[in-house]
Image: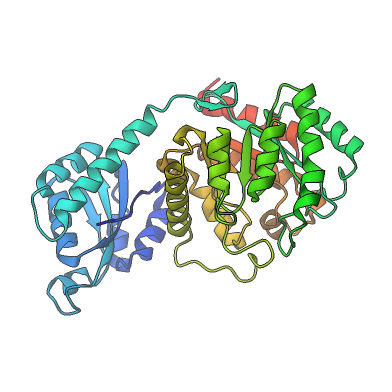
Length: 409
């Protein structure tokens, strides 16, 4: 049985009330629960009502608690059917939850299976806490100290911000020099716009746009190279030309051969969440719970990647700011970055110059620098490992100050 366990990062009273409301807790109960402070909050989906009530009593006995839906007790009495399920939020200390696991390991109502899944989940958290530095190509980074800046180079006539600026090869080459001089550790080379409403270009056109740039970077600069593509044959050519990373906006879903090409090439991969396609992704995107859905999608796609032969240490995840999300969705994602890190992979955020910033400030794309820097700094505070940006120098400086404040020096 898969209970879909997910750690929540509840930072304040308002966030607590919002999370409790999502699982159907009563307003009165939520107001009482939100005044309690617990170091660990685990959301578990698909619990039977009897099991949910047992969990609550066991956690109360340990000094913790369990937030349940308003109908859990009624369902447990059999008035709405035995098969009805509910979501719960277990709250307590790590030791409380470990003690709970021992107690429910031999109990019925699905609790035995839950005990095993909770133990596996806590083991995963322990491994993440002990994770070694991130390695891409021949370069190694310390996630506790280094924020990796990925500079964007769109060799396209129609990207949403810099379309046409670097479409000519000599201009693209000069842009590479600028990105490197301003402090980026990665250059992300894209040959096909994925802005909302965009249509794909031919395979030949995409190849012609990015491969010469990748070869130029490889020959002249000691910097990591990312190829922004969801086509496996383009990825293969990019790897042969020297790319260290394949940045796939589709999360390996638009080309069934992509995972195999990446595994064979031994390069890193960025697995991003997208709802729909670039052509239709911004046409009224809806989610029942945006964080749950993105988390589940990234969990499924990363599992698929590993099963396809991609090494876990080669995987980076991206929740996909602006790719099938409203302004409110994007804000919630940035606020909940730390919850995606529980999947065990470095997190990349690409918020630079995007429309949600324009929506907040009522400004066109050319006037969104300050908003982009604010999003970058807050992403770092919330645990982002990599920032994909247009304004490299400004972001490097802003992040350096933010990092110094966080680390106390």
